[in-house]
Length: 100
Length: 172
Image 1 (cartoon, helix red, strand yellow):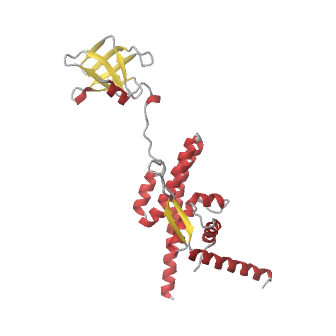
Image 2 (cartoon, chains in turn orange, yellow; image 1 turned 180 degrees about the horizontal axis):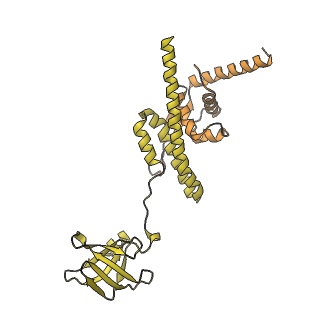
Image 3 (tube, helix red, strand yellow; image 1 turned 180 degrees about the vertical axis):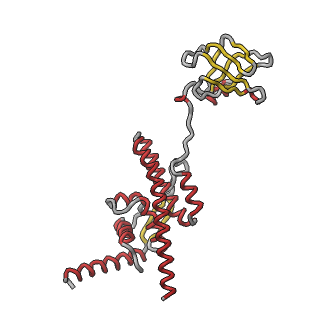
């Protein structure tokens, strides 16, 4: 399964959250400008459709004045795909530097 | 006029010393409250129920003429004395654009992307308003519209590439 650089970046962030859930703005802030607000949800939507990411609505108290966020979590398939992607990237980099 | 009603509408009672009748308009004398305009020109709408009056020389104030059956005007009730005291209804930022884009985008895209852009933007907007950062709040108002448009454009490009990929697979 192919994933883009941006999709890999989002998966890396979710994987580094160590099982906890993240929301879009959190990922944008952590990416140091690599991810934008307008594009992060499109990427997450795509990853969700591929089955690499799961999501659920934030549970807020009934008197909360703010809209609930959607919280994202990496799935087992997503983690395996990310692992394969990283292995491929390191092999490719190694090939370029002559390590292999 | 009951106190309950005046509290509800935050109206001010003004007593007038004298008034003249000029066919369709009521020319009313000086008001006792000094922060109002000195002279009010009140146009009387006979045909409307509740004797609703439209004013000139006031700051957008709605005026209701409170009169008895004997046509004795005792006082005028003002909806607002000045512009500052008038409450303002504000539409949530990005809401209209979100509604329009939702009507043209697929439901899953709306739920996963557009709703999230709006939710996140609204939260940021509320946080900035609560912190007193009006400049930042104004920036977010416009930024969230840009996020939504960008997301739709991104979604459209993604969809186009996915279709192209499918087409290539079937042609191979």
